Length: 70
Image (cartoon, rainbow, N blue to C red; front, side, top):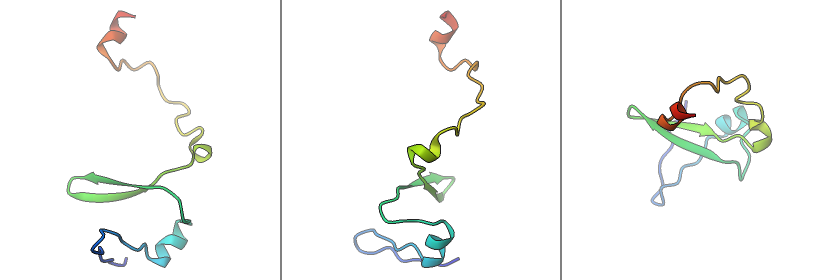
């Protein structure tokens, strides 16, 4: 693991080893997800890559109060 420095414009450079390991390309989207004082970096999949991610999800779960009335 390599530490990086935040620039005066709040930018960081992703180390080459990380870019190569995760096959990151210019223009690709990532998200920063804070959780319990830890900052996670998550690669946002393209629509094509995301297709089928929720296959098999249980849609019978009650999500809202108005679902009870249906």
